[in-house]
Length: 372
Image (cartoon, rainbow, N blue to C red; front, side, top):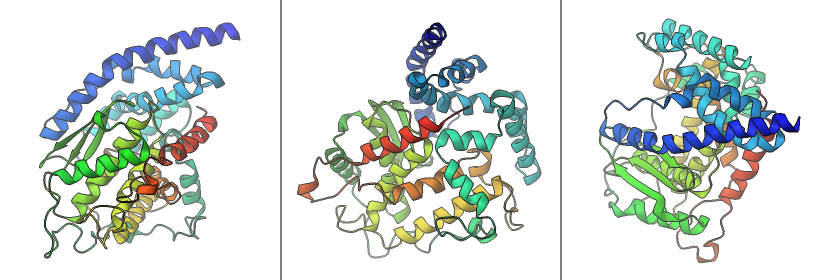
C-alpha cells in the first residue's frame, strides 16, 4: 500500500508540475482574448487528457493526497467531459431546447464513463454544491430546508430589477481609481498582497476573473465605466474572486469561490462599508432575483422544473456553464455567514482577515467528503 501511494504521488507530482508550467500562460492568453472579444486559445492537452483524470482519481483514494487530487480534479474533470467528442458535437448544434437535452445526455454519458456518476452530480461534488442540490430535490414540492420557496417558471423569466442596468439620474459614474481604492481596502483588511492583480477594462466582454497563478497573479475584466448599479456589482464580484484567489494557492470549490465573490459584492448593500458612490438600494433585491434565477435554472437542469414556454432557447448559463447553478445558489447560503471582506473607515477592523479562514474551513469540509 505504501508503495502504491508513493507511485501515485510521483505521478501526481509530475502532472501537477507540468500543468503549473503550462496553465499560467494559457490562462493569461485566454484572459486577453476574452477582454478583446476574440476566440480564446484551446486548453493544453494535458488539462483534458483522460490519463490526467485517472491519476487524480487514484490520488483521491489516499487521505494525504486528497487536497491536491481534489484541486486537480476541479480543473481537469470538467475539461475532459467538454472535450469528449460527443459533447463537442452536441455543443456545436443550434441552441434549441431539444439540442440542449441532447447536450445534457452527452455530458452525462461522458461523466458516467469517466466517474460512474452523472454530470450534475459530479459537478455538484467538485463544486461543493451537493447540499444545495439535495435540498432542491427534496424541496421541489414544498420548498428547501432553508425556507426558500420551490423554484417556479417565473424565476427564470423575471426581468432585471428596475434601474439596475441604467445610470441613476442623480449620480455620476465612479472615477476610474475607485476600483483600485476598494481593492486596496479589501487587501488591507484580509492581509492579501495587492500587487498581484491586473485590472482590464473592456466594453465588449462580460466581467470575469482569471486566476493566472494561484496565490500570485490574477486578471479581472470589468466594465470601462461604472455608471450603473450592475456595473458596480460586477466589478466588486470579480474583485471578490481575485481576493480569494490571491489569498491562497488552493484551487477553491466553486461554491466557496462564488461565496467570497458574493460577500464582496454585498458591501454595496451597506453604505457605511464602501466609499461614496458604491451603495445602491437596488443591490439587495437584485441579489434576491439572482438567487431565484440560480435555483430556477438548477431545477431545470435536474428535471424538477420544465423550461417555461416563453424562454425560446436555453440561456448561456445552461449551455456554456453546465451544472453550475446549484453552486451559485449554495454560494449565497455560505455568503450569509462569511465575514465582511471590506470595510471603509473601520480602523479597528483593519488587517483582521476572517474571510479566507472561513472559506478554508468550508473548502476542507468539501474536500474531506469528496469521493469519485
